[in-house]
Image (cartoon, rainbow, N blue to C red; front, side, top):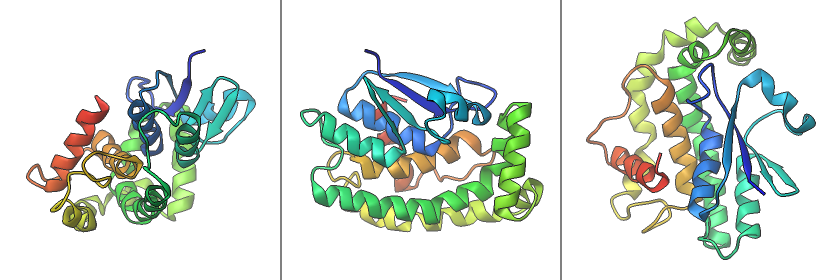
Length: 221
């Protein structure tokens, strides 16, 4: 039976853009597992699998249905123990939890400020209306008002990556010699930025950019 991964897309189904979905795409490839990706617009997600989840990613694996990127990673680790490990033990799981917390509280808000209007413009008309209403309510201002500060946020973004930059002085990946799920968490945030923002953010000479490109190569994206 074919594994199915529901991911997020805008008007162009060939251009998925969710950081959480990319975590799972890389996790599946890390495990060497075949799957069919089904990109889905925002407003169609509640219709998937009889309303199983309000958000993607959703993974179907035989009779199993799992949502939430970290929960999916934990499932894959347990269900396929003979495939390459995503965590390499309890310590790797704990490390990934910390990295996820850092990414969600530091990187994701910054990417939102930089790219939220660009993301809106990638959507179809129905999704644009949903996205504008939900994000303006969450952010407390219009998307256009958020966008006025994008250049300043982009200039400051590199500083938020200093913990990763410091670590890369001694090892090529967060996971050590090879990437683990913790790497895929941060990669998801940076790939989200790269695939949505219409302004340059990353410095090509930054060690973080080299790490990002190594992750790209490992994922074959």
